[in-house]
Image 1 (cartoon, rainbow, N blue to C red):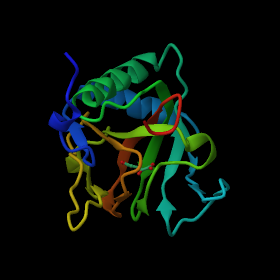
Image 2 (image 1 turned 30 degrees about the vertical axis):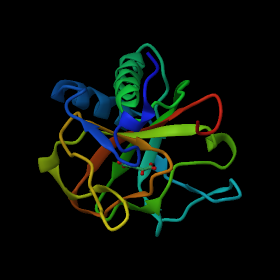
Image 3 (image 1 turned 90 degrees about the horizontal axis):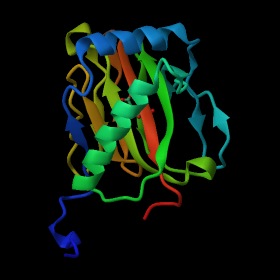
Length: 194
Ligand SMILES: O=C(O)CCC(=O)C(=O)O
């Protein structure tokens, strides 16, 4: 039977799946992330050039490499995204483009933006953010979406993943206390959005 897309759920929405990682796994992810050398996060301008703009994005990041120590992280995230995609977006996905370990200290934030193109980012389909800090360890740092007059927020549960289309406008509000750690990344397709 051919599926009827008119029965699919609203696509311009995020999805939070609780506890894809256990608290012990979140600790391990944080340990691996902190071992990498964190550098100040850049912003990609529309001409594809990466620049430091701390008023727009104030965070430190380290790219997570997929190797025998981290493969389970990539596998778990990809499986969760594929499940959510099959229920809501039905995009053609190929693989994880990139995972970054992000650290938001006091005042850390990222203003409204999208994760799509140009250049090598043109085939991004879905973005994700995994919460590896317990919500009791920081204040602020809310991941929020712009949806018309609504500003829905991602779940903050330890080990949860929030998945959303890379074209959705989103931001991270300033951290007011403590530190927020997250694993953020993108799933790309073979071609631009379809
Ligand atoms: O920290 C997050 O949860 C999201 C980060 C983000 O929006 C990005 O890196 O594009």
